Amino acid sequence: MDHLIPKNKGGPDIPDNAVVACKKCNSSKGDKGIYEWFELGRRYEVPRIAEGKYLKLLYQLHEENGTLDIKDTELEELCRQCELGKHCPEKAKLTVYCLESILRRALTEFKSETSPGVSSLSRKAISKTSPIEAHRVLRRWIFALCIIAIGGQLFTEISGTFFSTIVHFEAGFPYAVAGIINSVFSVLGMVCYIVFGAISDNLRTRFGRRVPLIFIGMVSTALLTFLFVMSTDFLWLLVDGGILIAITSSLIRISNSLTPDLIPLEKRGRVNTLLTVMTPVGSAIVWIPSLISLLGSGGSFSGEAVIIQFGAIVLAIMGVVVFILVREPPVPEPAVGWVKDLKKTLDWQELKKQKDFFKLFFANFFISAAGNAIFLNLFNFVGSINLELTQVAIYGPIALAIMGVGIYFLGKSIDKIGRKWVTIVGFVFAPFGSWIIALSNGVIVLLMLGFAVFFPFYWGGITAVTVWQQDILPKEARGRFFGLIGITSALGTAVGGYISSVMADKLGIFWIFVASSLFLWASLPILNRIPETLVKKKKHPRLDLQR
Image (cartoon, rainbow, N blue to C red; front, side, top):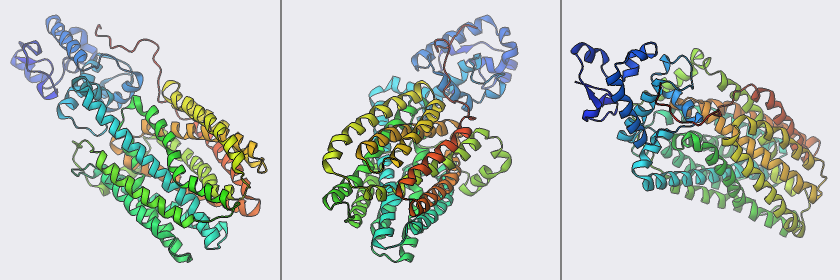
């Protein structure tokens, strides 16, 4: 007797999964599926009785496991993971191999309930058996990712904007000194991000591989941030804000790899949009009391140290909550050592195979430069204009409503139209908002209009690029490859922050928006050469069990 679907591949031990076979055929087939054994060229030679039982069993199991319907995005992911892919003449196209490999993956992942980057198909299988529990776990993961996003933005606002305020207004140093400290922070963070990314790929603990590092990063960064305002001495500001915090905050950025580990491919666009929408909450935690302070003191700065320390306390609490909420699924693959893994990733022969990664790698330099060109000195910009509470109360909600609608539709388009389309559109039109702000001369109506144009397109583009990266980067090496992308993030952040600071000193604070727009437009020629990862189906995406 021979099992049509091998037992060690998840096949059931039932009469419908068994046929009479001679010893020679039984030995030759081994643990292969029928079509894998016969191969595509001889698939029409499969004995009719055996094939009839096989197709009937495949249909029943696919139906039970919720894998009859798949999307093109799911098929793309399965092709990258499929062990039969080397036999397929054309990638991302349904063949009889898909009947075996899709079901095999769903069955084996369902039985083991492992795999950190659980595919959408295995999630369907799990939810088919326990939909309430599966939904509850996924919802808890998404909530934890939202907390991490809020905490990350909270720290970005503190380090990118309020650190600069302390350096310039409290310590009395020029803007360029804040740019130097920020550059040291960015470059050192770049190196640490690569190392910690490799460590997270190979860490195996009872609490997971990435969450423990994120927890340590959030708590230790909060402590160092709390201590940052203890002195206005240049050496202290450089060591604490430029060196130590650069090391610890790199651990928080591992969450870039955690998101695709936990979230199925077909939900990543919507989840990443939600994370983008939640980031303003992190900004609000520090900006609302800061704006109240500015409005109440006629535009003069006060209370920055208290705001920084308050934000640090909130960040530490968030780290504890994330650690409690998320229990990563265990990783079946054994660790090979982060040093060895890192060397393999940095091998030029291996890197040359990742052509699309290199395009994202270089485009990310200009994207990061554009972001930091504005956000490094954004609070200084707000402090330089005279804000009236009445005008902000009237025009602010209108601008926020426009931003919300724009972000919603752009975010929805990521999974509907494509990652590339949203990115290009976002980065083409966001700079127009920058120029409106730069030329507003402090007029509140023009400022709100500029913000309403810039932020939806900018955040929409950033979200689409993030999903694009998650689709393209190899699943088993996300931590390391996100670390490599961190190189251009750090370099771009350093260059963008320094250039915008110099322009603010020489030409005026409004020119930071001009610098940002030029960096965004510079990224477009590179992004346009990267293929779209969201493929649209021309017909109903249902597996055809007929040959």
